[in-house]
Image (cartoon, rainbow, N blue to C red):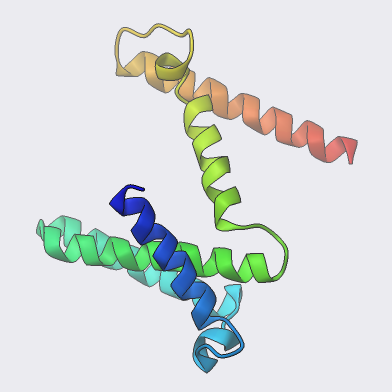
Length: 136
């Protein structure tokens, strides 16, 4: 297994342990609502690190954002809403779907063509989602 996969698996396991019966009381008390503010705070820290060109700090702050993503996914898993695997799977599908010039048959000449395709795919997604809501 590649190192980044081992480390990611370890992170997911650590969060599950922290949220377990014998884990951390503070972590166990947290909800989506109580921790969402940290996601915004960490995003500001990333912005600051980028602005300052501080790659060491950027690495740390991106880790803090990853923590927030995994934390939210762990809470959702406990609530039987979704899992981190589902988050990643949906993201992978979205990236492939929104890049048909790389993963599909579309041919592009420049970034303007890519932007047109991107907007077209996003519009198709919105139409599909609206249709799904109507059919429920």
